[in-house]
Image 1 (tube, rainbow over the protein chains, first blue to last red):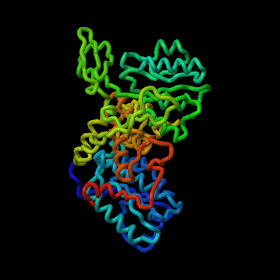
Image 2 (cartoon, rainbow over the protein chains, first blue to last red; image 1 turned 135 degrees about the vertical axis):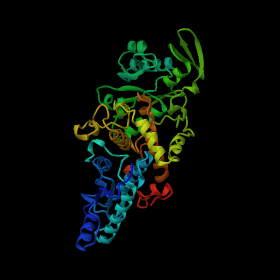
Image 3 (cartoon, each protein chain N blue to C red; image 1 turned 180 degrees about the vertical axis):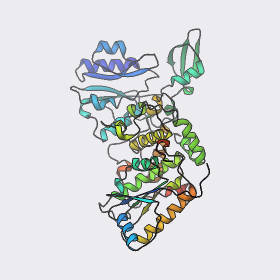
Length: 146
Length: 325
């Protein structure tokens, strides 16, 4: 399958309500550009992210999934992101074990003051996924739109 | 061994220590031993069986059985005792209603491996020391037991019976095991090869749910896969995604609680090496968060229910593979 030159990936970004969602907001008020491919879903805390959500995003056509949360130690609920960190490490390792491209999933810690980091991360992530091409190994053909 | 076990169970039933005994009986075929509850000495003598095919892990049945009135005796092999201890830790079994008889085990056999060696027409198999004597309709053949062990027994992790009230046979020790070799072999492959390997294995899945139903760690009363809206409830997978989804989530739900008892692979009618998924998690946990054995004691916290401030970042997955980013 050849990667179409006009391929425009769909990226799902799960952002924690307290840090990263506010960080995304800040990058918007600062007029920083990041691609419109990124669809942000707000979650109460990074540890709210059930591993099934990530698989579900891939099923419904996402080409990359990124989780943004408060920096470790800064969690609004004190310890949520520590648990999320362990879970995501193991999940990503398992996806890699099953042969799913490892660059498709990522965790990035973005605080409410890091609007610039948020925009830079998203620019870089979209570029990586565009280079990687569409998600074919973990897609559900029944959900394909075209 | 079987005689000693029946004698012990008879004694416990007669002196009123227990009201029921959980053991194994012959199912449809002689190699098809199935868990059974015996409530009388006569039933025990007529049906109780313990031989090289008593692979079934009885610990999960205690979740329901320990909540029934009266006390139940159960026979646990070393690996079953790990599952039992893990369930105790999760407060799933009422310990006071269970009388545990630990039985030492020298490995359980895989009937498919016996058939591969013997061929057609198998009538019975009995154990004689380190050998199995298999009778077919026209011959009697002797095979080495080590050639037909279940995969999990060939790489046995422990002969230690963790929790027991009484022992039949010797207490054993944790074994040196090379059970992670196969996982390491897969890890050394390229992602493309791994993807092909798992596509080949997982595409055989018929979604019978046997792996979930037999797993002692999978003991939720309401399972996420029974949800009509889960999108993965179909009996036959309609898309490769469903198999991936089901097996990733099944393994993830037992990660850090799985004792590697190997029941998932034993019961799989399609011979999918499901234990490799669980072992991958165990191997990762051991490497990233320090050695941890689920069910080895009642105090330590499972890796996913614990954290430290300087845990590795999820990007370690890329770094380990040579740093794609």
